[in-house]
Image (cartoon, rainbow, N blue to C red; front, side):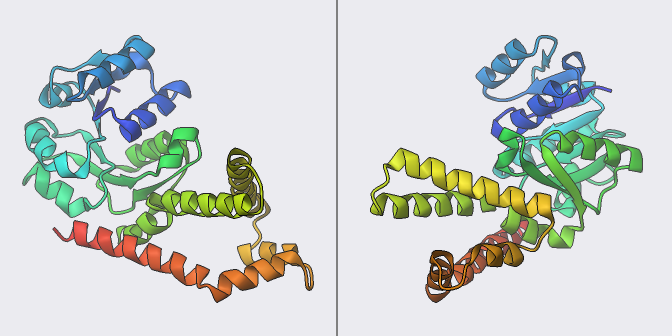
Length: 269
């Protein structure tokens, strides 16, 4: 099976590199293309055997599966370029705001390809990603199982109904930005108490990492884990009370609603 990557930037490149590093895909089975030649040159130097295509259409003509790693604004043009060569092939899109219907429309009537919409997130760059694979796909069971294994190379994945993709964007795709904001706020709070900035950032980031692992590995509800930390009349319950009084939970939920609404607007175009 020959695998093609169109768009070898941060996310597209990360997906391919993770699959190569874990031995899921062999470099000699890979063809890549990016309008920025330096991207593909760097990748082919790092992984000998990778072929660099002359253009998008040439890549599509030579592979069995195409991962579309281009930014959403450029996807329509790419689909137009490759649609004559996609019949019988597997097409995977990671573009935010592009529904399955939009992908099919972009490829044209009777295009004959199998289409899968997925939504990874940036923690995939460190092997801790979460990827949602759209349940409404024309992939066969075998191809969907293959795709799930591909994205499991980035961390973990799940098959999710498309009606929940707005929520996926809010809770996974956009959420690293919320967490970075939280880490920065925690670090600033520690700096205010006299801790050096670099030390504060490290302590805050490790606290977030450890807390997330506690949720995932214990299976306990986050509220239960929070309550376990709160001693009667102690420091933590005072902090939790301050978070509630200043609207912390409401702010997070409002941010997620804003992200989900923006994705709905993009999908409706």
